[in-house]
Length: 577
Image 1 (cartoon, rainbow, N blue to C red):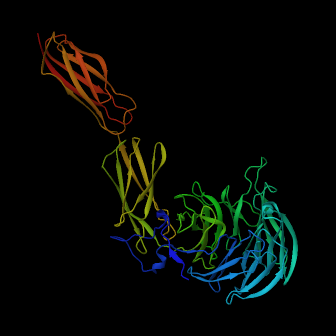
Image 2 (image 1 turned 135 degrees about the vertical axis):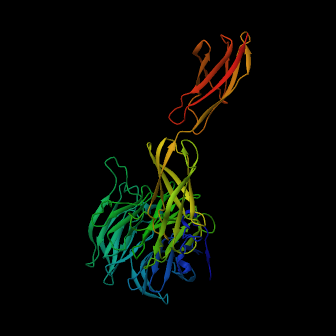
Image 3 (image 1 turned 180 degrees about the vertical axis):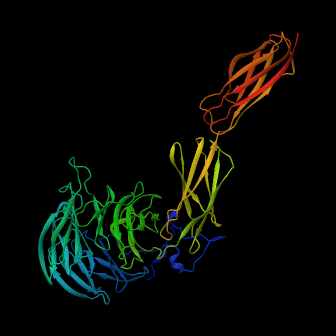
């Protein structure tokens, strides 16, 4: 039953762990901590409805809803934490939807078409049955405050499910009961710390401005606390809910909003948190969200195509600027996107279980992802240097430095980022790869004369802490210009003089062709001739009729500009009769 394989589809920017080589400190650490691993199992299901984790016995349960026909039997595929399939539970003529594991790990609660059942998490034998309101759509199941709650949509046909009236019912002290809470659509339930339970409403035709709310379940019943809708007075900004999660300490609520991305709220009043998470990559629509049980990480799943990441794993604290670990799911070995409600963590935060599907939603995969368990220090060591020694506006400049990182050798090279601050402001220069010996080179072409300050940063990743920035100020000078003249040694008064030349300006190209001034000096005095405009190839020609015999000197000059030095050149011709 070994159905797992190791995927190689982690985004290259996130498979960074540490540097090895000259000048680096390598600390002993288990190999499993060197990088995130992704074990993938192909799921034996044709549709997905729920995912649940038993941390006591290290089991993962994935439900196949199979609601296409009311007498369909559902299945629950059971895996261990290494992605090995252990067994499959089949429900007789009862499609299966919601799943929840009891707080003590002894029972798997299963929401079925006409009842709720409990299975022993060791023997997989059914231990409890309670009749429930008949369900065509699929029901959510959540245990909170020591009681079991489930949704009960009222729809005769599956086409009615998106707008059906859905009740929230419960198994209260062992007996089935209706709580009285209801609204339209396939309501979502999510239990969390502190006897809190979230209820969220998907966007539907009867709910153009859906809600999310927090219940207190500590008293054995549902007491509604904070609630929020998101549309403005023009109806814009409505919640398009795909998933929701409570942080490990219960203080924050994260919403996977397919329209707005990841929303982070304060759980006490559902106001926006002071600091939120960075946007998902362009082209990625939020589909799932989950906090790790130890409070360390948040996982943000998405539906994206091509090389756009489908999953970001990052510190749960939004103020932590550590670069997210990115996963790209694409193809027959990985699936193409994270399914809504398709992520759960192990309680200790060591594993993230993620369900993906293909573009058509007909095949499914279970990913067992292990983020690194430790982080190592990184230092941007020593002073930066640059070359050439005299930086010139508009010409290439290299700023060099060294990075030292503790920990094991990298799967892929680390990268630093750099900015240049000059009179024109701060400019992002991009990312630059760190070599095996720890050195890196920031390449730039400064565009202004004056001081340019380069700041090099290492933002960190899931294996490395951010490093303290280093800066280096470079004095940028003007680029050189030059004029070269070719003139005859002798000429006659009647034949005239023809001088050719070449004008060259290094660095940044001139905005328009250079205009050169020309002066003539002879025994009668000096004077200015008509200026000449340099051709596109840098050449020019001066034609003159000398006014007297003997030596005549022609001086050609250019005054320079903001980015280029001035230049001048002279040629002397002996004029005969």
